[in-house]
Image (cartoon, rainbow, N blue to C red; front, top):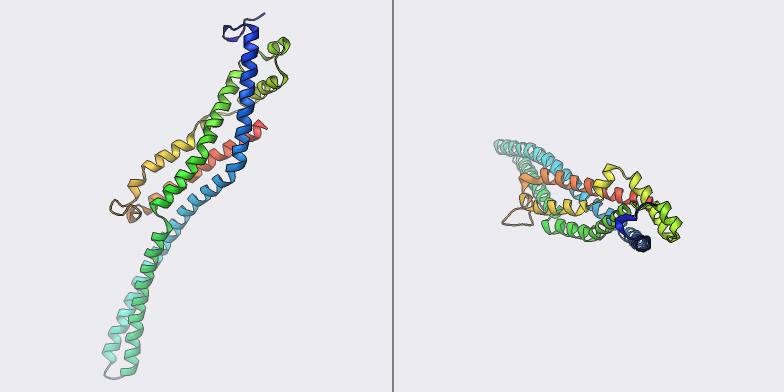
Length: 257
């Protein structure tokens, strides 16, 4: 008969095996509960990150469009005003209307620029972004730790000689957990193993540390204009990475079932 794992007696190994399987079963229940309670909100938070990036991109395009339109309209308004003054002695009424319309168009163009700037401020603020980061981190950390524990216990269970333990009288539930462990570890690809750690937590920590690069020091709520495009891309990348890991967690949840 082959020696017992870790040099334990058969009785001690069975006891250890049964306890580890029980711990795994509890962890799987907890993981299921956490996924049921939190996965929808995590998807919503990822959607909010994507919305920030989308709105920033949209506003930048709109700002550029308004800048071009405002510049053109301003030039037309200026020409109209000059033309109106030139024609004043001949057609006083018409010239005044032309002048008024020109001035109005210039004012309108300026107004559009101001509105764009105000809207841009409302779209993203540092506190709002940090709130999303902290909420996502708060909801994902337990899931990450739970998943790491599950895979660690599965790795240990699959090291046992299962047929041998079965003959020696190991608990049926414990044997089921061991077979599940063999199945999961065997079918877990390299991408799955990479995502198994607390990747989301590390991604969010790295993102939080970079916030000073994108927001003004004097007014930390205001996004630096020169950094809007880069920040949009960075938020979009974060959302994609978080979605990848959440998808992996869901795939693993399916494997556990």
